[in-house]
Length: 253
Image 1 (cartoon, helix red, strand yellow):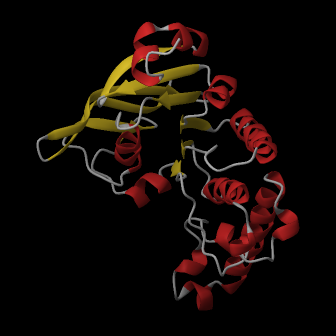
Image 2 (image 1 turned 60 degrees about the vertical axis):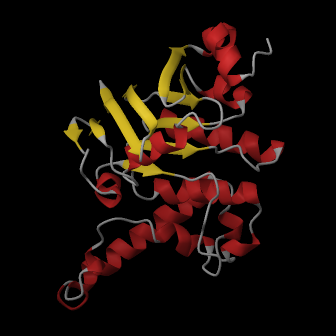
């Protein structure tokens, strides 16, 4: 069953098609890699899927629902989370507060509920705090829970962002270059945590230039070039495909 499906997506900026008739289907529980050379349209494809930009044509379905016209926050509520190549936590807030901010649909968000249902509000806040701490523990940042996010390294910010997106209970997570700027030791932690989260039923789609990471995590890879689908297959098939070598690796075997 496809948890995320794009059909004939096109996005034009003036006369240029950044994404040109791309179709993509992601199965429940899959880890799918999306690769391609710079300018292939990968990030625009993510923007379309997440709702950051509107498609010129085509459709997007999330868990069977048409979300083509839905804004980003509606897609998040429907189960689609996204991380970014450059994480932007709130630097002055603690790690715990950064994660708590991602909690969705709390009773206390409604002004009068704080007076008419204070017990429920307090119980939800305790549960949210416990969950946020558990997620920080998952990404090996619990010891820094009370520290401001500005103390984190680039790799730690990637881990914080993963915890933050998990706070929203996503069905699908779009990961935009999770390995960028991450040292080898933290990269192993990140790979391990992605595997753990995926084992719990969360689906991943990741853009990544680190081919080793993609090969280790992904059972299937989609290759884009010039806004279009170039090739799709297992990591071992992609590595041997002449069109991929030419477009993505610059023709070097």
